[in-house]
Amino acid sequence: MRGVPNTLEDFWRFVNPDGPLPRECPQLGLCWRWLGAITGHGYVSMRLQGKSVGAHQVGYKLLRGDVPNGLELDHLCRNRACVNPYHLEAVTPKVNKLRGVGFAAMQARKTYCKHGHPFSGDNLMLRNNRGRDCRICHRIQGRKAAARLHARTSSS
Image (cartoon, one colour):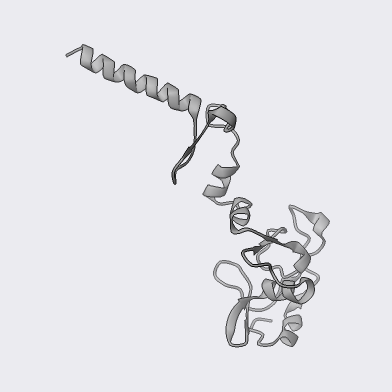
């Protein structure tokens, strides 16, 4: 059943509560598959009062209440086509992004640099808009650069 529901009553006609069990967290129970429109990014949508809205947001509001200001819904089941409000958690945009599987999220979750030094305590260097660096590796690179410079200037 493809299409776009236009009312809250229509919402339930587009929900199949016998969806798959989430692979990563089966303890959540079954996903509620959306049978209506799905965006190119895999999210579910419907029209409500002339506007396109996320069907998962509508389900959340109906059964759990409003999403608090400044928060957005994260699919704990990792299924964007799921409208089960108990598979959704209201979190900050930053938390939602960090839980994702994109490059920035994977980098942010790393606790050690590529050489095995911890990204913590005195060893953590925060770079303006460039992420994190390892202080130990940064010092080693600085020493190598200084040695190269010294070798070039000594040989002249």
